[in-house]
Image 1 (cartoon, rainbow, N blue to C red):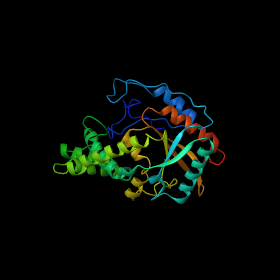
Image 2 (image 1 turned 45 degrees about the vertical axis):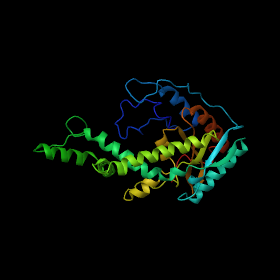
Image 3 (image 1 turned 90 degrees about the horizontal axis):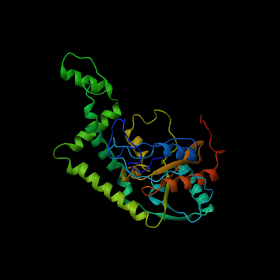
Image 4 (image 1 turned 180 degrees about the vertical axis):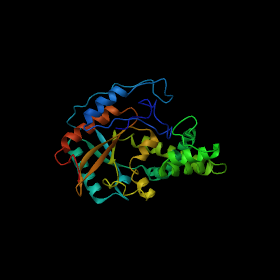
Length: 294
């Protein structure tokens, strides 16, 4: 469960991308997620983005979706979605309809630019946030004979390849002469994505999509292909850019591997999300979803 941006304090986290960083519960069931979130949600004066007002989190017990308007995001069932993932998602949509939900298709036209916008905004903020890890004040410290070598060895040994890649991307995007062309334009795209969500929620209560365009891939399979790794987030990044709550639940199998179903709601709609996710979870059942996958 990814709650509304600012719902859970980030105090104590290592800052990566300040406008995106969030804390949320991960549990075996929807009810467990709700129980955990109810204990960690709330205002914290040590986090400047923390909200000072919040609705009590309710433990869901709904078994029906009568009257709930669910919009299926058209763009997230098209390009790049594996056939098995699409089939499992469509089966979940049919289940939601059987439970009484009103199903329609909605469009988020700017969401297709979400990956590009995210991988400018997040690395730019990471570049600024991770600059403090120089081995003098924060993080690991490498031994060296002079100050420059100390900085180079500390950051070279302390950061992995992906972190270095993002820092370099972010530093480039924020460089003089490139800020408006890259970072500022990405923020404008982010605004368009927020507007798309606002328009969609004028006609529906919740949005539905796959969580990932593919099933789980093998450990280390995409380490050498950053583009493949980045596009794995195509269905979740727009929600993060908009700061909206979203939850993922298992919805079946494709070629023996689990498929995730994502429900997204407007800001502060956690209780509605938990209720809908719990009803679907109970209807889909756990028997078809193995605890381990070989």
